[in-house]
Image (cartoon, rainbow, N blue to C red):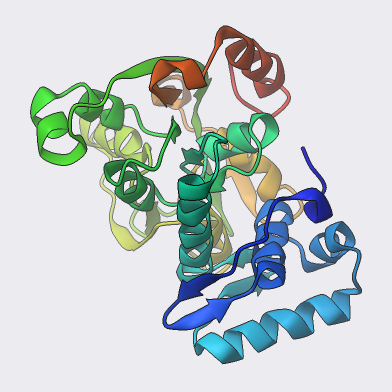
Length: 289
């Protein structure tokens, strides 16, 4: 992976009628990579206070909140992610490098393998896909593999793309909560594989209620601190281990297994060496091969 000062960020972009400079883009890229203002400032070789001041100046210029801080670190808001998506869109149009987009779970793999993947909610990933701006797509939920294979979906939304599907790893769900796990006070993550868990609960006759839905599992983890209960991808446990949060394995744990896939469009962008590199690293990331 390149250091931040070696990244090719030379072109400003426009967002909400405002110009985002290359240095401001680097701020967001560094924060998105590290989820820590201190670590991001180290990447950029500036002081944490300077980093924070520049972030706040960017927020003031745009008039929107671009990051959220919590005990789990600092993550970009939807507005912050949208700025990066615009940057990667421009970069794709002006660069010969291939463009990787992943959901939040597959993104844990993508960021160790590919250079500068954009990690976002899957609905945003699909928007970029329909614009023809994605070479490699990380898919958290196999339902979307089914949709990609649906000829009607291809014609309606994607055009006649050629693609190859690579099953890279498996993941399971665990239960996390501040106190006792409450099936009737769940926080849901949109476009995730949680639907698998909900189907199991229905079959098991376990009554449940989703009180709130978000697009980002890291936001969901923060909301557990407020009393919600969450079915969390096991590969993301590392983001809750240092918190005062309980982790339980459900009795139906084995049934929650689901595939993490990567889809290569225009097949020459994704080769066997890439796949082997992934499989050697996924175990260290908390996935199953």
